[in-house]
Length: 312
Ligand code: GLU
Image (cartoon, rainbow, N blue to C red; front, top):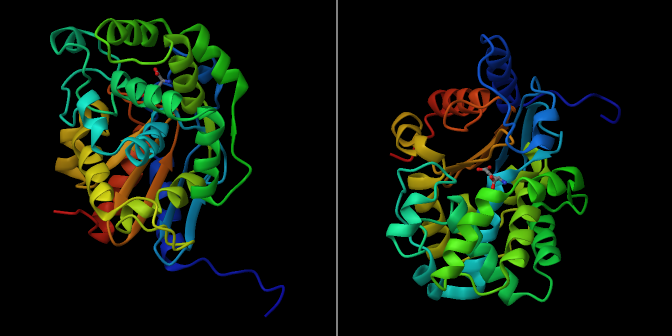
């Protein structure tokens, strides 16, 4: 009947219950502060969204509040680069876990400027370099790609974070120059870094992120549009690297405890892919020692346990 408020679905009730549990936990973790603009976010925000393959998105808490996606952007960048480069991409970046911090530089020297995987910073910078080389305007191509995937034209870069990343990006610049010295960066380093910082500085909500990556849970086909975004083989490959390398140096533990391919970012977002079911995105800014959102980890772990979502 028109005007009757919609009753929450069972899934929404479950999300609300898990959110409530998370909010009652003792506070732990710290907001990322090595990018000064990230440190000014309200640390108490918390949301979760699940995009199911029927196109429905279920939500609880701050699931509609845009946050800085940071390294979750590496999933979109990788998808675009795989589409553009095909198998040539894997000559410039490998697919092994690194066992090092996300912004570590030591391994790159030993391994001649070829990053271990596309989800550590060095790997994502190589991916950004391929986008800069293959698109006349890689930043607008990136924004359009993400907007279309999320079916939301209101997705923007956060200029404050973008400028803050640019002026505090010395370690990323060091990675890029080292790779350039090995011939693994083709464009000008400044242009490659500009793209990389731009994509990290995009703001999206949990609902946007979950909806946008639904194709990874559906063998490459975006459920709400029916569009084949990537081949089934590439959806498999992206999920495999997410599983082994998406959660920084806690990827093994996440696979062990939760059993889902996932990617997190230092903005406090975590996205987890549940093949043949849907995509979960949880966000809360306080991070644990590995750089993963404390409450985000808690909520995804609980949901996966309660619904038996592990892929194993
Ligand atoms: N823009 C951040 C950096 O490059 C991304 C870090 C992250 O979310 O892992 O340091």
